[in-house]
Amino acid sequence: MKANMNSTDRIIRAIIAVLFTTLFFTGVIPGVIGMVLVAVSVIFLITSFISYCPIYGIFGWRTKKAS
Image (cartoon, rainbow, N blue to C red; front, top):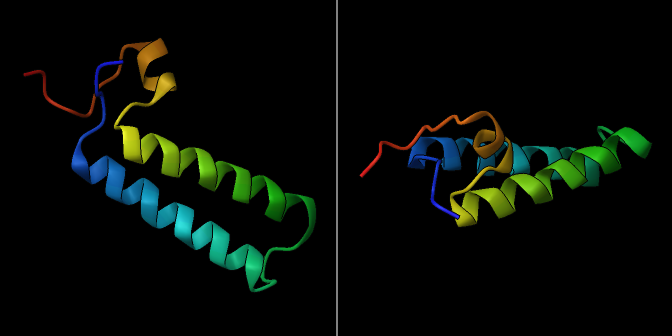
């Protein structure tokens, strides 16, 4: 896997993941929708740490400049 996400993209995903998880665990977004958002948060965190988004790869998108 070749990195296809820049640092801004990674930071935004991490912030969104923390926000979704916080909203679920504080009870603001309960139930199934909350659990789905937590699952999305886990995916966002994983992709942030590895700097690779499979969806970007499928469509050939990159936010990281080629080096």
